[in-house]
Image 1: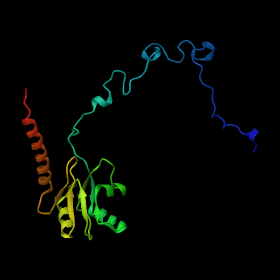
Image 2: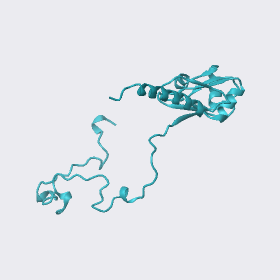
Image 3: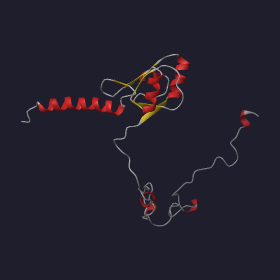
Image 4: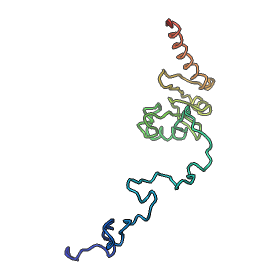
Length: 188
């Protein structure tokens, strides 16, 4: 094989159709657009999903459900994942920064610790939420669970406390502080 012998595969290179070049080109008269109709006119652009006036598919299929704008989505971290991290690194303090460094969460993720799997190490865990079973298992092994609330200080949890009630106490305190500040302002 030599450079001068190289050529494209047969049938792979074709000339472009030359439109609007008279009757001899084979596409004369209408320039291969056919007679009349919107598609034959200049400036025509098809609308995505348009079916010629027929009710389009995206409008004729039934719609259901909704997306809750107040949904809080958590990244789930289970106890077996925490145990494997402890085995690999030998660290007994697990916080959001540590999880981010090990690729288990993104920068703005909220983390919830769930109770799946076995945990044998004593660990101190900080996260945005905990399941009751996870709190119980971590506390039984002598570890601590710290609830990190976005935009405020962290709250330490124990198996006796319900994490939701602690979180609402902190939020209520913050709201009451704001309302006291508003009450002191003269509405005039």
